[in-house]
Length: 467
Image 1: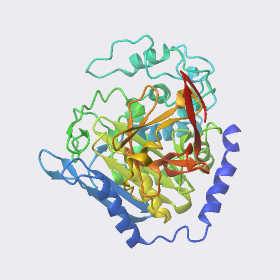
Image 2: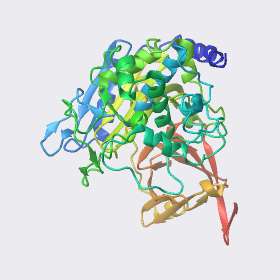
Image 3: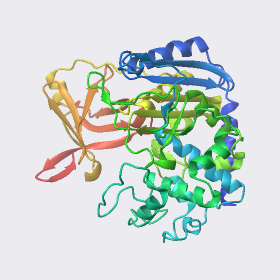
Image 4: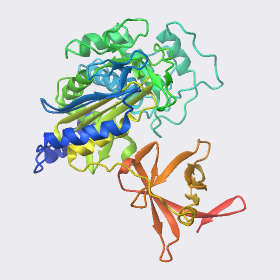
């Protein structure tokens, strides 16, 4: 009954949005022109690349690729190439688990230990919590253990190691992204289906949906059309370390193509994988208190782009980055696949979604500020010591410093907004008092409100106080 209770609000939301005037009226010429510009702005044509697709219903609005599939051989990237999709794998894992729930093979609210009885899992951990990253499963061993070797990592060895880790928090009490939790889900799939996880996905999802280019990204297998993987920014490009692909398993070990991802998410959203009430449960935030851009359901991230609710996921792994977005109100799927783990696939996907919505994000251009104007921004902001931010100015360079994190370069755009160089959608808006002094920074994560306020602090010794 708990599962079905979530269905009505989500379905009403989608129905209301689909009925909105002009929701499906998209100017294809405008979309092509603006998507071309967005893609070109983020890709070095002689370096690693990215492939993108925008589809509304059965219509392809945009499908293109820039950059190289293999830089050393000079092979251009095409929209047909095969990429590692990293954590977009979780959408398939979650889809299969919920499919098994619908068939009566599993229960979302049963203890996960019922399906993995030999591991000694805390009985408070449920299947639902594993799917929503609210189980408290840690990704690292405490104390640290030697890494697994270079060969095939057996899932049973991983399951035992994961189960032995102390919980990060009381199950259900918080939310923290957990790849290890999704490996446990892989164990549940294997125990309940009697198949290896990749075979279960193949038989229950890939083959029925004709996902011909989606599968286990085994590095030893020759895969026609698979791209070479890279790391690093233009000018510092290097071959990526793919890591041991048998490690991520159901958390991030698949490869796929633009067209397969479009088919997959359209099928998931339109009742071909699970019925509408179950998809509604997947798209309900696990924690109502989560920030707008941090909401997560069952294997699906729940974001907002230009005020519209969207569903999706991102991924990053050695030699690859990916993003997948579905805009329910416009029946639109956007897929971005890149062969560089440094590429910001989510920013490009959000830009493309904003283009579809008709309110494209501006391309950030740095403004030239005087030394005095830059100096007026320098200071420490935030009344929580764990999340405090310090703006530092060195010459004409502005950087953001956070506790225990590397500094982030910033720019000030023509509107006075402070944008992250690595993610130019997110920005701080300086709030000034009547004398023009900056008293607060308002953070718009991924360019969306409501903002998070960071009051300016005055440091007295080791103590920060509000200005």
